[in-house]
Image 1 (cartoon, rainbow, N blue to C red):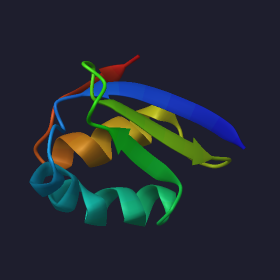
Image 2 (image 1 turned 135 degrees about the horizontal axis):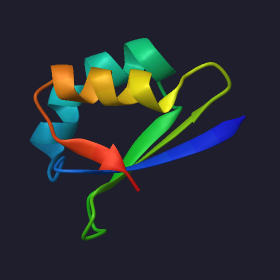
Image 3 (image 1 turned 180 degrees about the vertical axis):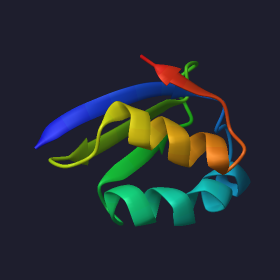
Image 4 (image 1 turned 45 degrees about the vertical axis):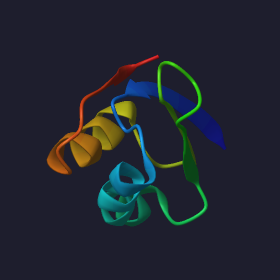
Length: 69
């Protein structure tokens, strides 16, 4: 599996709840996490099939900012 990391503005439990459906659909439950304690709010995605662009589109569609870390 490859690991992709992104800086986001997903900064609280409510934000994570908002983005969960999109990320679960793209990456699958348990294949992603957001480190809200990190100043960059790092989103880490583990997947063999997803591209960085697909993750960016899913997060932006959920209303959050994201960029490659």
